[in-house]
Image (tube, rainbow over all chains, first blue to last red; front, side, top):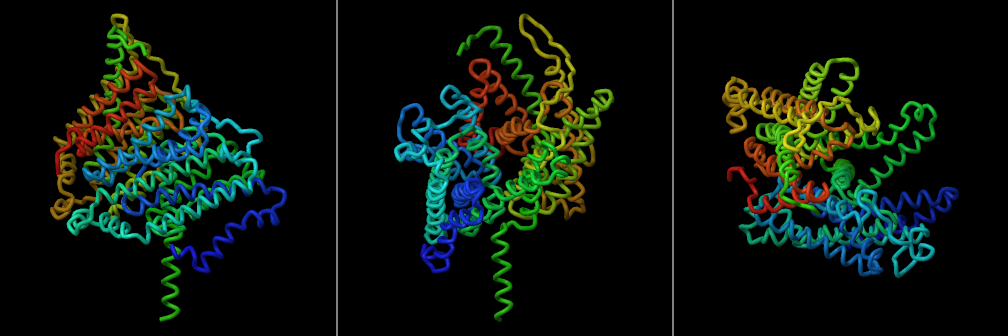
Length: 343
Length: 289
């Protein structure tokens, strides 16, 4: 926790917080676009950080797409159908996701379903929630998705809508991101962290020294699923459009896992680096291809999948050669270098 | 919501039975890989997709269907071996979850590659085999043929594993991964052969699926989760269990879809799967270890 208050960290946080000003000065024409990119990165960083809370303790879940989906849809549906403000809708979504997380988590941890089985079981959870969303198409709009009803000009405190004002939206996303980092550090500094690390190394040994493995894992699952639900809800409030493909489902769950791993799940800013990496890769490629007539002619409409192609390839390479992710590897390299310089 | 015990209900049950043959065949390859190499290919359904595209283009290029199908099986078998050689082998000694995740990268890669190479349009071979009408119930011949060939494929695999030298070696290494190399067995070679056979089974499934389904880059996401569910439900690595699980799951889908919307059939199947795993974590037919 105290790490956040160190001078270096405060400078870093302030630098990120002042990004809208930098964008305003450096790119006056396309301010909206760059802010959109930054907001996306911050919201996804928060969600990836939420996932990595479980992922770093060997609980590789492919089910977090279910939690973001529950958070987003609970908030939007309560607002659209019942007129209930997201200030109540978001907590409802978070509680629902947490309950689902615990309902699925408890038997898993109790009966020691881990590794492949845990991944495939949580994959089934993702599919189940996605199918429920599609199945309730009278309320949710099915696979076409739905939009929260706009309140007035689109900026409203009661409706928690802030999308037209990108600067405001940036600070909402920024607050969310800092909150995610705070939670990560709290977990990192807690006794639960050591218990969970021990349990991920050897469950029997951990249990034999008095760690209640099931309880510890349930705690982290509840926290992680609540964070993802919150992230999903804020994503819905910002995008003002949700569909099973954008906020729930297997593709999203896989992206969550991979972006976190690409960034590094064992370091604080790893998931953030993962989010920057994936978003910048997609946007950068799009800009490069749109900007060059030769590439555009060569690739045609298939250019849309190019970022996914490179992304998939990089993931394979990351997991084989850099399982600690970009930031984890960079950190290890930096430490080695420093220890060489000052023996 | 009109669920009546009439002739259409029976039709749904029998069509579910026919679907089970295909799902069992799909699960068989994955189960073989898991049982022998202890790796879950998350991208298994994407290999099927590669096979479907291969057969599609071979057929439209003028080859007779049987030849195109054989080429497709060969193509996916090679893909399976290459996948093992390039992607699985480097991570064989790392935590098991890495092996699952690395094939997830392959999933994203293959999907994107298919989108880039073939576009997102639905493709169809245009082969129409007609239907078989019996007492007001209609069953498409494509499904019946699929069911029979799937059964045949499973029989051939069983004969291969139980009657040939390599098959015996594969069964042996699946029982003890540490001891077999000490007996002078080249486990690397056996893994490669097993991967090729697993790929070949995916190719066979692809050859049968092009008769029934449209081909598009995302088809793997439609079948993939079902296949994993069947494998886990039957006990990962247990081929007979996978076979029975395929029948259970396909009945949920077929009956659920005939009574309600299609999604609810699938949703109930996934819910049943989760509950079943909570009650029997080792799978319905897996042995406790």
